[in-house]
Image (cartoon, rainbow, N blue to C red; front, side, top):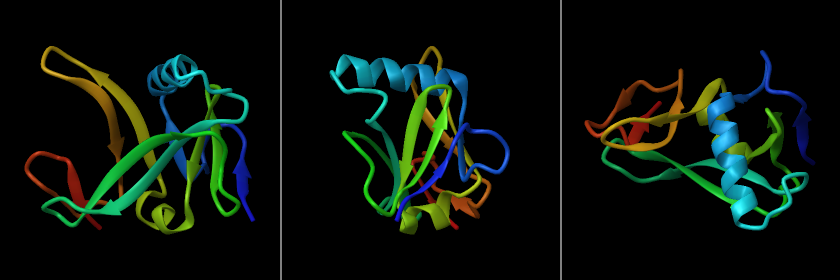
Length: 121
């Protein structure tokens, strides 16, 4: 049973900035995916020097038990086991001279590794 939260306002399990949504939608469309159905899956997996790391991929459609939110036209899918680690997080897109990419700002993090790629709650 999926849970859907329309619009990414306050109270959404995960929020996405307008820049991140725009970048993700551009990538979805370049992959030929229908943005009305497909979306960005944000998940947590075991790994990294701090114990957990973020993962992202595009999915054609949500799984039955996903929490689904929509932010600036981007559908975001989060599975129940990942949600407990990332609830309240914000996905942003950062660009700079040295690197560009998506970044998760997670209020549940107690410690991060030195490179910022993994975390512990």
